[in-house]
Length: 400
Image 1 (spheres, rainbow, N blue to C red):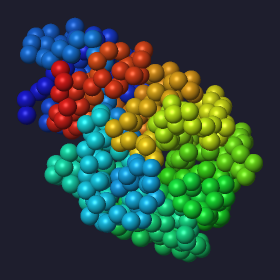
Image 2: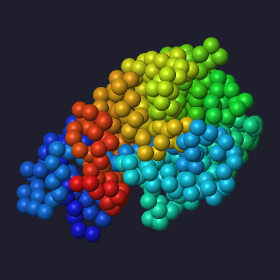
Image 3: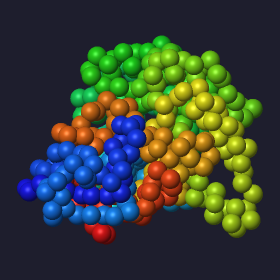
Image 4: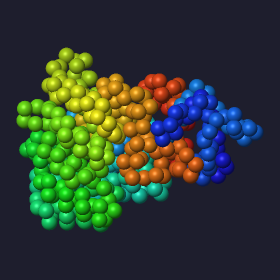
């Protein structure tokens, strides 16, 4: 394939470096060839596509999705009652919606093995329109625990080790554990831990032995402490939810920072439902919890926590085509700069995945490229105004 060259008013490469003003990106055979200032191109600028007042950046990485979940008002009922075939078709459509919205990589944090690993393979082969997929497959949970309907139920130290090995054998890219209960699953108790500290250590140790990392769902405070002690790679939600409400524990966050654990706050989950209810005059029942979480995340940011963005796509009113909301909320509510917020969905997210092949625009990297109209480093809302979505050098959206 011939070299393709894109010009734009600014290039944000996803590494944390300042944007390149009046820059270019060139790619060939699915890989970035080079990146720099337009003035350095010389005669090579002839024939380039000039996007004008636009921002070129890496394709977005959504770090928390559930491909078979419906996003309806009855996510649990759909998960329990829909056929395997319907779930598969929904997963294909959700993957398509993700890519066409600018997300070139998703991390799926809990879906039936046969479905998600098939989606991953079909994406690799180009059989479907889908992002690159990183998948845990079925989650580790206790018997009857959070998301047991796409989980491996395990209740002892030996059983959690066996579950890790089962998932790696099945093809998991990483191991997802439901360290506490969750709001979706009746009788799972979000404020309480589902596994002991020793269990969590065993999960992390056996995962590491097999070359995998652990993502830990944590609402309850005890689960956060257990996950930090075990040394998981990412903590999902990190709510510090206790029977009395949302609390905060600085010593746990100090451990997060010390161990280099990433936190995926999933800010966008349920936010659209909240907005609809407020517009309809319905009392926001989760308002105090939301306020507590926002205050906590601000303190985490001030403490130096590394955030990664994932919107829990598939949960109630949480769309696969609305990932940008999480990035916007990090700016609006938590106080990150636009550049910091975009990093949580580009280079910093790839770093958390443990992959150096994407997430940054640099020579030799995979050509996952997003171009948006306007200056996304001044207004992250520009991330919704798509011009180009390119995955591995192939263009899926072209609105130039």
